[in-house]
Image (cartoon, rainbow, N blue to C red):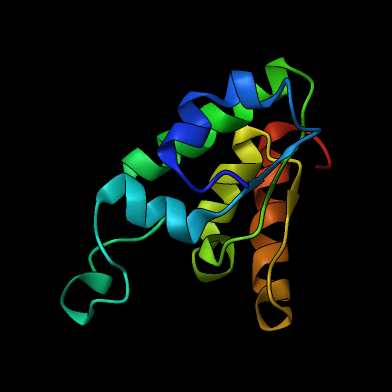
Length: 121
């Protein structure tokens, strides 16, 4: 489970121990940005669309793939933010897990992103 920034910074070492990574975007977002997303005063200001969070996700995908390891996402981010789902597809994510109520919206975002990278995911 890659939820801590240190998991991503050291992904090359973790890849030696595990067959793949599951990216927990909710916790990762909180820890990268140093905020509690459940705090009402800041919740609307922070999400997976933040550039620092995106860079961490892309870094994990790149490092994992360099070592032949897949990366999936189990966080709420792709369901809440179709643009984030598209970003993950363009970054090479191997799988997304979203709740049933977000499936169609997310599938549309994924299909549109796949069209820009030249092929099915």
